[in-house]
Image: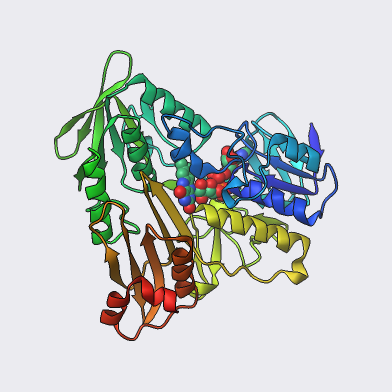
Length: 432
Ligand code: FAD
């Protein structure tokens, strides 16, 4: 069985949804020429909602409410929208192999799908404990969070142990956002991670201290500098305790694991250039891979960041997925008019009533500013590299303040006096 399309978007996540919107806006295809193939059974949705609105005890977000592209205050792309636009959704379908030379994909259902141009938007998968040699990590009450099925399992497990104990493994944003959601659902949380503080890849110790104290005030316990080694289970296979390397046993009615992700590149290994440094499919400024008919976008793509002197990065953030997807479609449909992408890396998170944004790169010396003591805080940090602002973080800012720090990073604002920068704080960016 075989089908042929002009354009195939492989993957049905955030990037796929924004690519579809861009195709529809530009109108560069005819009915039946464009399809999205996705392992998921629903049309593309805003994945960040899964660790936020989706886990609320009341008034939780549910589809179709958070299909793309509501996250960017754009159209809500429901299944009906795709139909109206003549974009075929091939859902619940996993591509199990790809032949780039023959421009063909092979699905788990035995179908062959060929393309003239392919956009790879396969995103990333959550790392599993099994990959670190932890046995029995497929238990009924161990949860990961990457897709809607994972989120449904998490909601069901939470509901099965009201007032119970959860152990959250990992101190990154998935761990932090899930811990906050669990607390909101009245579950007692212990967070375990090997680093010295939470959000180790981004936060400075001072920023982390604020959030850890805030979480502690909500009843969260932190166990840092150690890892789990095994589980204790009951006769039904449910985890009852988590055993740590330092010998501690933590009682657990449920476990949530957020220990990082890996880009879904395996279909293309040996066929396209993969970045050794960050494990993404390497693309140029047009999001084009080493094969000129294949593009890669979102979490799976490693693309050059002009702002970082062309350094090739693989970003795991929703804004990057949205923008790379739209840029790739522009490159495909109007190559002569589309310049190389010029992207300012941006990442945000929301937990409890807190909310922060980060722009740029956290390299160089960090300079903190603002009020780190209030329960409705407004504080942040600049990272200064070689005399210029390289990155900026702000908690509790207004729209204009976030805009101001983003511009300071974008313009690589010059810093002549670090003490003065610290004194000026947010005003430095606002005056820029
Ligand atoms: P994805 O959205 O992961 O989509 C990949 C798609 O490809 C999926 O549909 C998958 O099923 C499909 N696929 C993969 N392989 C195959 C195959 N072989 N065959 C068929 N289909 C396949 N970022 C932020 O900046 N801020 C946040 O607050 C934030 N919160 C998040 C919360 C959660 C719970 C998660 C999981 C992520 C969050 N992110 C956040 C990150 C953001 O969601 C990702 O950067 C974004 O989803 C990447 O989009 P993508 O399209 O590249 O990949």
